[in-house]
Image (cartoon, rainbow, N blue to C red; front, side):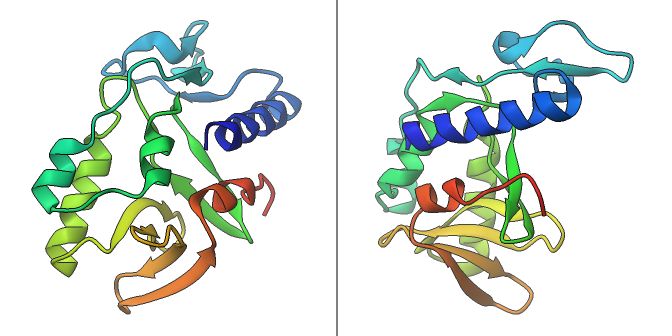
Length: 176
């Protein structure tokens, strides 16, 4: 997973530089530890950032105990590889966004999504890891097989989209 994420960020940073002549930018958030920020705020209060190797490993034992599950290894590796503020692009024309891993907040949104998913389904066979931007369908990983699906909550339907989280990330492009 670490190599897959490294390759994704290499492509992402290269694309961003070619298009914007800068490092990736994101709206400044003073509640985020500034270790990923580089440079200063621009006039629109955006700041450049770069991913960094994650030096503190996240312990998932509390989540696993609370929900009586063992999280898929891809999920654990995803959250323990890099600190980053944005992972998004297009998967087969679909605008997708995966959970960022933010220093000091790396699991906040993930836990919130997990709790919401559990309330709806009363189990965690699938683990939400992101969403489809335009339709708000969830991107979920089957916790046993590691397969990735788009989950349409309104229709209660799942559509298979990738063999693994790694394959999914490798397939993300930056053009629709």
